[in-house]
Length: 179
Image (cartoon, rainbow, N blue to C red; front, side):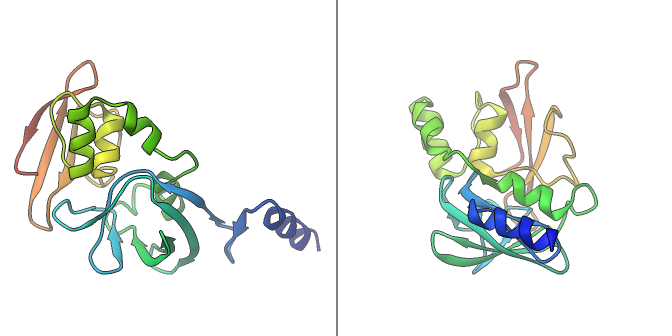
């Protein structure tokens, strides 16, 4: 009875829970999310089409095998935690993708060259870690387990990896490989 009351109270304030207690998040996409048909992988392959940062997103359920289902701008999409599942739980990964505050307000304050890079989903020298995340998504945790790492490993395609190197000041100073 108490669990039913708790779930009802959460539903009353707009917070849903999945069958196993996972929170069904709702908000905005943190970053540009690349997809293949209706599939978003944590590799976030840059050469695929993308959903822009700040799109409305609602997690509708958590499935088996590190999968989450979502509505993104009214479109049914499936999120797979394919590569980083040993480093973080699906719920942790999804919580990074769904943010409460629309990132487009922050993007609008960035210099024009940074805004253009984010719109194109590319990385350029001088970007901060936050700007890189908004532009190309989080680096898969199986190759970049910490965001304070001096080098992030990212993917342009299934076979095309590239590295983003950060200076001591936390801005991109070098990109190795072809993004």
